[in-house]
Image 1: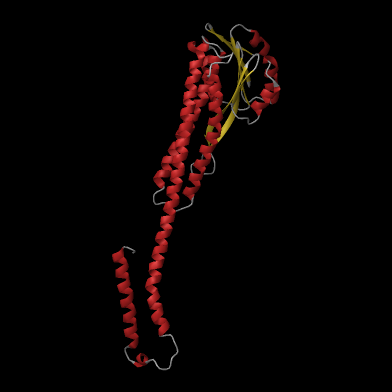
Image 2: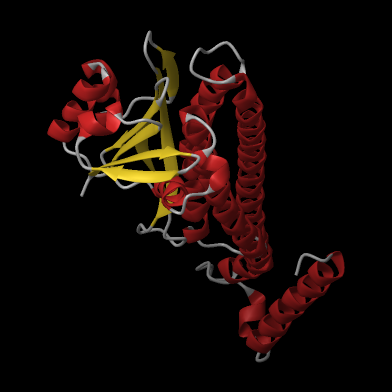
Length: 322
């Protein structure tokens, strides 16, 4: 069942199948739509007076925001998770949109996918958690938003583990696979950044204390969530700096490795150069080269070439080039 309604008050929780009956019941009405179709979202919107444009924002990939209307408060947020992909770390940030609508005595959560953060708070209501039942819809909305923000910490924790793995592999690595992993981490952090910055602005509106549908006693909870989001933004920026530094170190390591190879090739070419000169001299077709008639000329030339090569190898070793 994708559309469910709970009516809760300090005395307990009642479940309703009919939207109109649930809205008219005494207490706080929470209607949850998970994996909802367009028709189900429209039916809930018609019952609670939610505008079609708000429903369209839930269905589409719109940035997080907060809007206050005459009869309700609209909060649009995104969840963030890591899903499997084709990279070494098998991760990619995936976002889902969830709409939270707060009325004077009702709460509506709409999403086109199952949102675990919403499910956690829904289960808390089902278990009749006293602290949650004793407060209004603005506090239940806070619990949902707080659970979504906690999910951002999980994403950054996993990315941090990947950064540590990259830093361990980066010394001595010369392949391009590690560079792909570093670039994937940068893309993940950029995706998280695109979620965190507008989320910070949206929750800042909730924490400001000038909204009609957020009780004064609940404002401090939203301020606490805002502090968490600010911390997440700072963590994300720190991780981006770490990944950028890791990439620079890796590219410098590749450059140093290339320089070592070029130095070795240059030393070898330098050793071979005088030997090539000697061979070139005796490869000339002059008729009068007196030493060619000497019985030990070949042995002398080979010995001389070996001596030249040996002296140069010893010199390069002493200089630390070999």
